[in-house]
Length: 321
Image 1 (tube, rainbow, N blue to C red):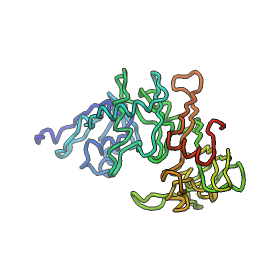
Image 2: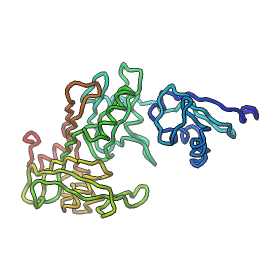
Image 3: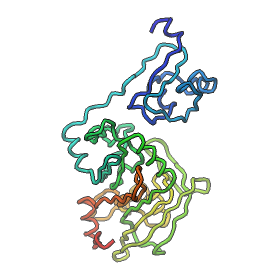
Image 4: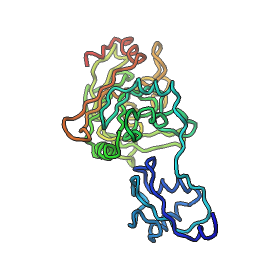
């Protein structure tokens, strides 16, 4: 970059891959050497603008918008994000997981062990495979909610920017009904009710855990016992009213019935002989408004073969739910 370019105001267009990203994260992605404090000052003083208007750090961008950039030192700006290509094998595997598709929505039955997004040491995730789910669409599908890596079940994607905005608002506005199934240790003292226990995060990166505490975030989960076996294992239906990190796992532990295979919240006792050493939590059903109106969508994902065997091992029949 020449001295003249360094001292000049420039404009950059928001690319399709950066659609719906916050402007502070856009800067972190494209200009990683610009400190957040500097960006905040530029936004506050109007040196950074979006389509000629002032913006806050939380503003979400749309493809095609023009961002005014103030004079700055030489930086490496990435005009296009580079993603690893999805291998034919990975593309086939993620497509086999599709349980519903129309022009606006795709739903997957996400397997346990597959992260939704990447992170430290995580290179295989749904976000990295979304190009394989374009089908005939020009736009790349977008994530609108999350499931824990170890939780299986229904994961919904938006096929357009408009659908992503509407679906995201539905999840944030709590108009989405979520139904989970879990196998837990023991039998709850009360067969159905609401777990009201505020939760706060504890621990650092990689060791993140939540626990009940008075200064935690409000969290509620409705539950009922669908079946139980010899007082050792129960099949619970869980309906979270809020969406806190590890909410269902922590709430089951709070009432003394940790989810089977959940060593983080249930310790060694949560692993029973004869059952696989995995989290027995499944996002069974999502009910939500379709982003283009009409009837509500009801999307259900069957238990995978491993969970099916666990249910049968303890004498439960998923068909009776």
